[in-house]
Length: 66
Image (tube, rainbow, N blue to C red; front, side, top):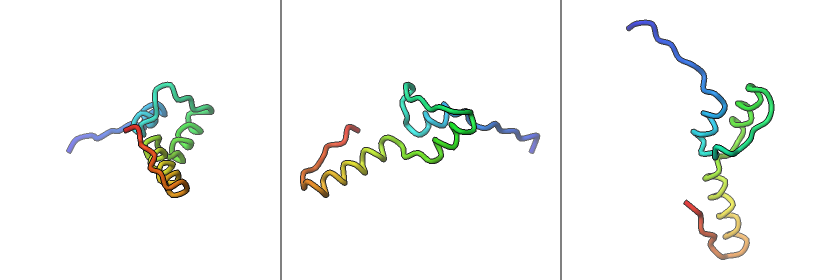
């Protein structure tokens, strides 16, 4: 096998892969942005968690957008 090379993903690529909208702004250095995405909960997962919490508290299901 030949010379294999790879590159690190850019912060905006990480955000896109995690389903963050293009308009989502992450501040800080490149390293800070990567760390923040690494600590983030993706928007679809957050929506499911909040929906489950609302249903547990109110007894009423909350429809998820996706």
